[in-house]
Amino acid sequence: MALMTQQLPTTSTSAAPGARPAAAGAGPDWRRLFGLREMGVYYALLLLVLILAVASAYTGRVNYLSLQNVTNVLHQSSLTAVMAIAMTVILITGNFDLSVASVAALAAVLLIGLADRLGFWPAAGVAMLAAVLAGLLNGSIVQYLGINAFIVTLGTLTAIRGIVLIYTDGRSLSVEDTDVIAAMRAFESGRIAVGTPLLVIGAALFVAGVLGAMRLRRDGRALSPAAIGMSVGGLGTLAAGWFGGAELSVSKSVIYMVIFASIVWFVLSFTTVGRRVYAVGGNPEAARLSGINVNRYRMAAFILCSAAAGFAGVLFASRLRSVNPAALQGAELTVIASAILGGTSLFGGAGSVVKTLAGALLLFTLTNGFNMLNLGANYQGLIEGAVIVIAAAIYTVGGSGRKAH
Image (cartoon, rainbow, N blue to C red; front, side, top):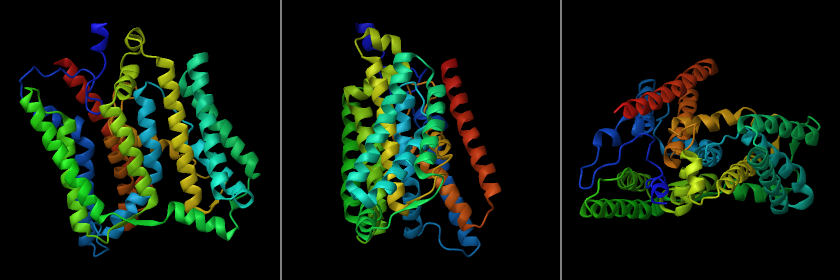
């Protein structure tokens, strides 16, 4: 049993396969903590923002770092980020879900199609129920029939998209009831002032990170990426609140994204459930022998992924108040790319919610920058594809290099 408990990761968001544990009393491995594999997505995001800021200033266009543009990027990325965070969880468990965009589209068309008759909240409940059932179906087929998750979710991707076409009869749907439209607008697009809360949250994160680092050093242990990340994140949040001022506001979809990301990050980082999720993906046989119900955790990941997709679909429908049969087609690739850019392993056992969030922001920062600079869609596809391949190469080579040591 002692051997089995060693398989459970102690740091969920940063531990990587092949990394050697630090000896008691040893200093932190700064080269690893700040290397490309651990921090590459943050470096890339920062570099991209600086390049776009300089380019927008040089060409005389709108300031890229204006509060309006920054909040616009957050608003645009929120739906994809919600799905990508849940995708990170399912990838950590060693599975895969290609059907997220189709599930989101199904939830969207059900909401739009039923809202005029049932009202917003009952229709949203039906949409979420359909999404959860889709996740239950995916998980049941994969876990109890033993069919590869890639094949199963590729099939359900096509089948659910077919259901969307049948339900809409190939036509666009829209909401007519003014009360429903008002409810949708209030649910998704209403803005909330976050300047003062950011100052409070930033201060709390910074203090928690510093206290955690002090405790680790007092106990003779190396600094963890979690402690460093909380301190740096706290400073960043403080800066956002300070420079944004009390009038800084964001849409509710951004608030939903932050709340969801915070909950999933906390569960994966600081709870037994989180450690078991990593164990299930890292070494399922060892996890099973240590008493973990592997099937239950993997099933829960499928349900979470589809539920998040359903919620994203509800937000999408509420944002546009109309939907067409091709809605969100291809969005699953952006969702998976966000997780890959964040360093989530396609083989299970490794992944970070915060890095996935940074990956989603990176992709939408690219798109937003291209639009501001009036670059064509052809260049967008080329550069985004190159970024994803380069990121995958960095993570793969970095992981191989550490194993060689």
